[in-house]
Length: 74
Length: 238
Image 1 (tube, rainbow over the protein chains, first blue to last red):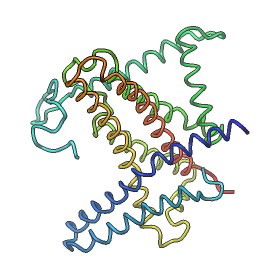
Image 2: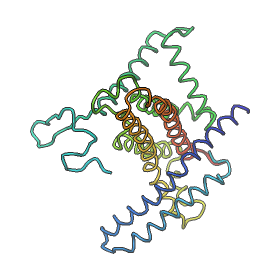
Image 3: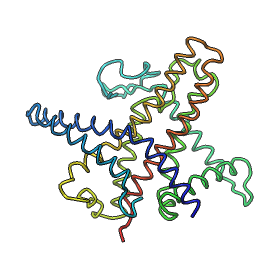
Image 4: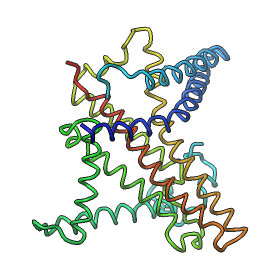
């Protein structure tokens, strides 16, 4: 059991070290996805704005999932 | 950011050699970091072959080293996602870890800075992007193999309208994995390079010692995240 706890500690360390980049990358991916969709559908600038906001929301959600993991989640 | 641009300068250095594919206009540039990457693969493959060729009950030499490494890594994965799944997915994750660790450290071996254009493979966004995409695809592969079509159910949890956020979250994973690894190693190498240009002696040493730490931590973080993604995709709900 003690070993298990030690590994969970390492895991938490790794996840928290990664949190910042995840947040930034979410916004980036949302923005680029939006601008690509805009080019595809010709609806500049609406999808960019929407996807940018959704990307930010996804970043926040992943932070939330990190802080409050699902029951029995790995 | 993309390395597939059509310009003549799309790498950190010009390609070492360019192979013409006969019959087409396509040229295959071979960069230094690709060769470094091949050398690392050869080292890993060859030492693994040597270690397992003539296995003894009492491990000696290289077999001993490999057994320690593999046992340590499998114990670690076992602690994170259970013994059984660690046996299943451990080989892929351990390979990722060892390859990234050796790549990160390849820039630190003595005299590396003297060779022009010699950079660790992980100092290049194309290589780290390939690693990120590999993890991304393997999550789908392992997930579908373990749970069938039920794997896609997690996109609609906890609520169906979150599906867009879940898809973005999934797409962010390879991007953040590759950018994190690339950014850390690139930054560290750049600092050592600049310091080495100003004061070639002694001064870059503390930075290189920190580089040892960064290299290990980044390999470790990458592997832990890959483990978390794969274990999240394959876990059974009771």
